[in-house]
Length: 79
View (spheres, helix red, strand yellow):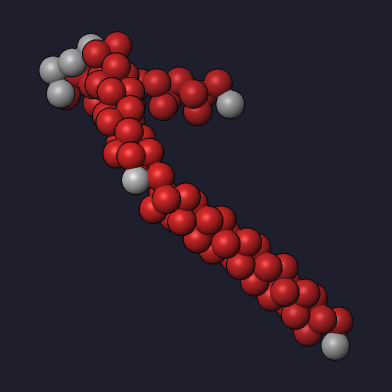
């Protein structure tokens, strides 16, 4: 697991340097962009709420689909 974290950190540092930024500057830049995006979503709260509801519904349907398909697969194996 630490290898994976180290690889991601190295990638993050390399990417920041490719933008002529320090990793700290790049992290702050990402944070500021995320804040800006969130403020846009929260200004039109009703659209954002609708998006979240639809997204959760989609995830629920995918989960249901996976469960039902898995049951069908198990039943066909038993036959």
